[in-house]
Image (tube, rainbow, N blue to C red):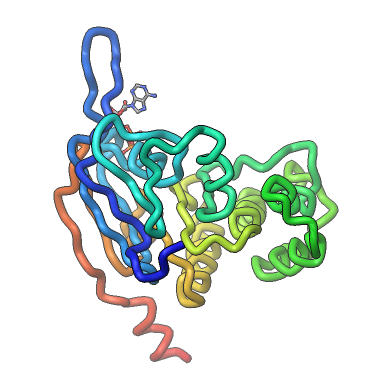
Length: 241
Ligand code: ADP
């Protein structure tokens, strides 16, 4: 990985979906550069292309035109296998509905991505350390269905961190949680960010977006605003702490 390059560069990305006879321009010429150390909130009305953009960054989907590179490596034209291997190592992904494996224990859910990446050493101790970091180590032997939504999302964040990615992508990470649990998840994201993880998160919650360091607003498949946020949470941390 090239450490001097930005974390993410998207250049004139287009993604169209065919719906009946219409072409829907889900992304209509998006360009974006994210540096390591940023915490980006992508906001905008439903259907404006937020998830499509995040899926391009995750390598889950690819652009019809334009290019996407992460950590100085271009995803454009990468084979499906290469993308899958890359995805497991360079980015961690958190979804609105957690998407934990229901038949695996919490601990096994964390170990799985390390297995897939061929990391066989210290998997158990690393998994336990990650569960401790997100505050659910006592649930290691439970099944996901035995956990609350907030607890499942903490496990999902631990899983996303399993292979030590430098970039964390999150699609509505608090979208399925009540405000208390949503607050716990945002606090956790903030801790990760303060410890050096670059975060790109989609959210429709203005209070959640305000915690990020930069807010990118989308409309009709395009970026129509890009603002550096006042770090209000850090100010309050300084005042209180
Ligand atoms: P957002 O995340 O902002 O709600 P999306 O990125 O999910 O928006 O969708 C952008 C546009 O692309 C919407 O009009 C949506 O209906 C359309 N779209 C997204 N995914 C598909 C798909 N798989 N097939 C057809 N249309 C899609």
